[in-house]
Image: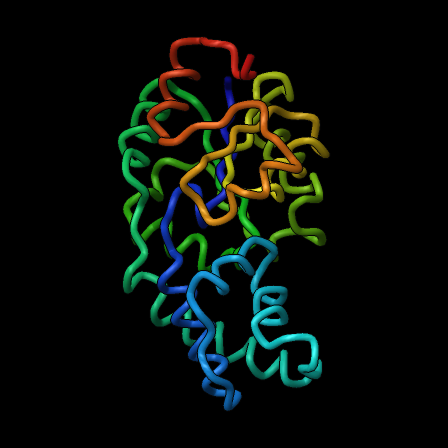
Length: 221
């Protein structure tokens, strides 16, 4: 592989608690009781507007969603690194990829300013040549627009590029872009791989590092 494109939440970072707290702060602002954290986690992956729409429920008006979304974004901006950490083995694996000269980027549906701030705040700013968020392009994942931009910027070919993510959204993004995809089982929504299986499935990021850096086939057999 020449280029690795990583999802952020559930793949590189465990941000579940900060997201749940921020969603429930927005619900409290709207006079609503808190949701169970596991329920909030199941809503993550398609960007903040979809997250808040799901968290408020189908009866919420567009005006209510807009109000709650603005509050959520303000709250999350202040608290997004309260509890968020890298998953075990992520930093070490990214160091290995960097030392071997692989190009790396982040492509997430989280707003880009938050994504870049988290990457920088966790000391990974020097690992990625680009961080793109859900508002970086006209279309979010699973649209291939972001992958196509990164391929062009890195000068990489599709057959030597891999997407790494924790949900079916990432698998569909890779399929739409015509690149390989690795799923991680420790993230937010590994159950979604049942309908959209990745080429490779790993339990820890070190397993991906061993596979990629030792030149092993990336497709499970």
